Image 1 (cartoon, helix red, strand yellow):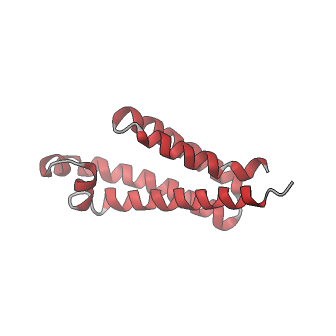
Image 2: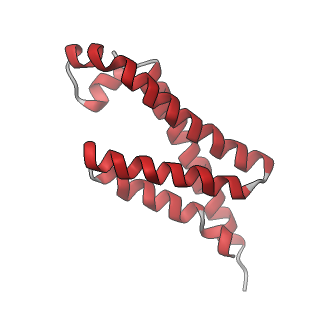
Length: 119
């Protein structure tokens, strides 16, 4: 049975998840009071008062993103499962506090990222 497609799909989804988390880090740490305010849908007052919390969450997203990059660059795919577990934990919390579609999107990415593991 040819399982090369599963490896390719899993790695592509892992890269995509890493890029997404680094982009979110950039939004939450650098652009919170400008572009991210429009994406999230907050007011100037809320954006100003929540900037420190957003920056901290951005660093968490960056940690997950860079961990996923590291796992793919070094070939240590077991590390990917550690960081994908963190992605799922953040998605579960984000679903209860922000938007339900977060968990659906991230579960799909994490599941397909792990598809190559069982091949």
